Length: 328
Image (cartoon, one colour):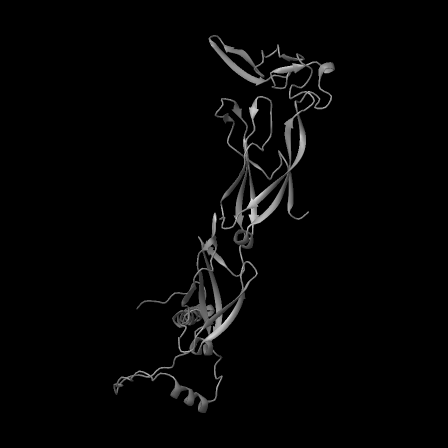
């Protein structure tokens, strides 16, 4: 099932969030577990319900989390129920070293159960593995980094209040839209005739609607300008009927060189706004040509400097190694 992702606690998907703490009722509280959940921008716009399948520890129902028959669990005599042993070793007169290690008799549990009295279902471990499916509701308008918490759904253990499972939303990059809070941004390419004479185009929104954008003739679109469509942004979290705005940045595509004959170009110039007045040219002014610039080849000054350096190297090369000019 595509909407179900599974996890066995102790693997690499879930991460622990801090150590044990105390709950409000004074009981020890288990560790929380965090998992990243990748969602698309469509999921955050429309909302989505998916499923989380997990395998977690639950208290054994056969022994009620005791590990064996009533009274079968005894405090470990070797460590006195502490789960660790403390050894003191003398290093020199007046100097001792204290060492702490996990008790080997109870494996750090602080309790021991006779083999014959152990619960057959959990084998004295007090907990068993159980598969559970949680429904994850991604609400409309949720954002990247927002958390969805399942209270008390982490591992269970005797005498410990289970921690939470926390899902951290991670928004995937979208090919058409970029999100900024409750607003959306997109870029659209138009031709020069559209920029000058008006246009109409259609795009598919995040909920599948076909949106028709119209711009009237006579209103000019400048290259790089931004126009806004009110109310077509992201829905607000917990108030989905209120939406942000959609901002459209226009990339105006100009025609190729020599796309029209000189005669037609003159006719076009008569239709366009008049040129600015040409200032009086001084008699001794120098006329230069404006050429296309290729940024990959560097500036002209750099090329001239390179040519100068090459010629200098060639001239110096005629002297040969070790040859110096004599001074008179």
